[in-house]
Every structure is written in structure tokens, then in C-alpha cells.
Length: 403
Image (cartoon, rainbow, N blue to C red; front, side, top):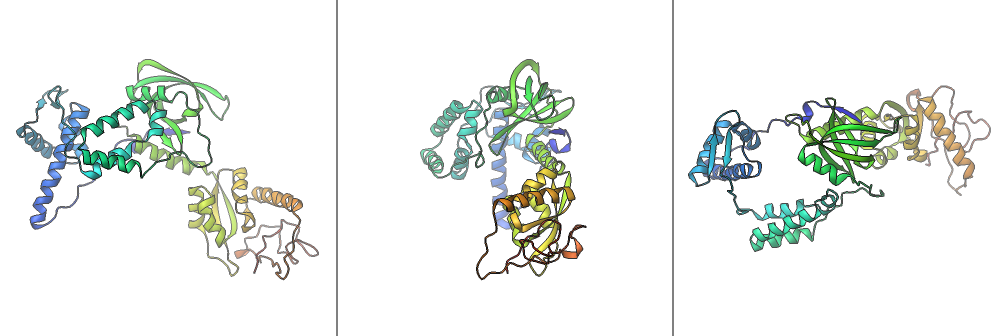
């Protein structure tokens, strides 16, 4: 999968802040917002080190003038924050200064404990680090907040892997995460679907993503961003070279753009189908989201028998064959002809394996003519029952509708 670096991979401008209140509530609201912003500014300087006024302005989503006022307020409150001039200047805290974890609300404490995901952290090689961090957090928090953190852990659990899928071995994930964190270039031997199956690449790792229980590497090479499945990395070497990280790169935005582009590009063909209203509803659970969404958006009005015509995006004829079989006798492929023949062949083979069982007292009627003359050329409506017989058309059997 290939993805070029674009504006979606760069951090976007912050949204405007919330509207102010009115009257006495307005003053109280402003004091609360400003106090929260001062704490955020302090923690930013503590965690990131030196930052310019422009960087603080972007991170806090306020004007540079507001940053100047907030820095002055911190200094007046006794916080040792200093301004350094020059190209490499900015604001920083006095070396060694740390603020304690005080002022956390109950909800914030609960969120901190809920954010820890033991499974992925262990895969990244951070299991023991996470445990130690939680112990330190519990020790720093007031007893009532620490108890709330433990309580929420007993009531909420995040299970990242999807259903019915074995965990994919990722022996190089911990080393890869270290290279990402330290901005080190890597060389990988990678297994792919195309020929040659094994390739060697030198990459600038930008981030790792856990998607539906599988880990992916987002990396840059030759000015482009590509995505690699970590489980397909056969060998990995961390090089003694700095990685070239694009300025302003934002992993979450880039991944979102990549997944949207991939969903659009993977469906290179379309199938014209006739299906029941019930089958259209089932596509939400049986089809990939992009396929189901497109089918529902393109669906025409149902006829008197509850059948409608729609267009479904497919990756290929064989992919469409697999997807259409999920709907059984509630779908008829109208086009392309190759897909219709493939589904018809499977239907005939299944019919040979499973002879029809008549249902006493319940006649089986034909589905009727296709809507708006959509039946493919060379086929005609059946004039006998669903099993064929005299007068049956030479084309594939129609899906019966029980009345």
C-alpha cells in the first residue's frame, strides 16, 4: 500500500475555543478556562522542554499575545519560567523544576487509568514500564482519586483484536517502536504479495498504528509515505543514522487519510445487482463498510415483491463472487457478465449437492421480471417453478420469492 505525504499528514489548525457565558457566569467561566490553560502551559513546558510562543499558541489554540500574558502570570505565581532570545530561543522551565500531579479531577484520574492498555503496551516492550508508571501515579494521587482509578479498571476492559483472528506474531515490534521513538532509520526485509515476494527497504519510521488487532508501520521512503504490516517484517536492523521526519507530520491525520484513500482505491470495479430489501439491510453486517454504504446509497425503490436494483463496488470479479454468495438466494447479479456466470456456476453446483425439498402447502413462485428491464441479454423470466422444467429459460435460475 502506497501513500504520498500530503496536507492530511500535517497537523491542522486548532478549532476556535468555546463561546463565553453571560453575566456573572461569564467571569467565572473565563477564570476556569484560564486556570486550565495555565496548567496546560506549565505541563507542556515540563514535558516538551523549550517551546516558542508560536508553538505554545498552536498547542493551546490561543493567540501569541495570550501566551505572553499567561507566561507572565506563571512567573508572578512563582513558577521559574524563563525566556531565551535568538533563533533557538523560546520559553523553558528552570532545570530540574517539576510540578506534582495535583489538581486532577476525578474524571481526569479515571481517564488516566482507562488510557493504559496492557496488551499493546506489552507488545511494544513497555509492559513493565506501564506497570511502574501506574504505581507512581497511584502514589502521587490523593487516596480517593487512586481508588477511583482502580475501580474503573475493574469495570472497563479494552480488547483490541478483532473476532475470529489469531494474534499475528510481531517479533520485531519492540525494536521497531524503539526506532520510531528515537528517530532512527531502519533497514527491513519485508514479505509482500507481489513478485518478488521478499524485498529489502531502508525506511524512515514515522509511527506505528494498531488497527483491529494488527500492527502497521507508517514510514517514509523516497519522499513518499508507505504503510507496512509489522507482522510481514522478516528482519529488521536499526541503523546508526537519524530518520528524516517531515516537519509538521501528524500520525493520526496521515493514517486517517491513508485508510480513506485505500478504501476508495481498492474498489476498482462495480457490480449491478438485484437484491431484496432484507438483503440490502444485511449488507451492513456482511459487506465491508464502503461496499454496504455505496449499495445503500445507490439503491432504487423496491418493486411490489420487495426487490430493488443497486450498484455495489467490488475489488475484482472473484472478490465480488465471494461477497455476493454471502447473501444467498436474496441477490441476483445483473452485470458484469463474468461475475454473473461465476455466481450462477456456484449456484448450479450447490443445487446439485442439495436436491430441492418441497414444502407441503407452500407453493414457490417466481421472482418476476427484473426491474426496469435490467435483466441481462440472453435470459428470460422462467415460466415454470424455481426448479426448472418445461419452458425454463436457458440462463441461470432466478432467486425464488416465497409469498
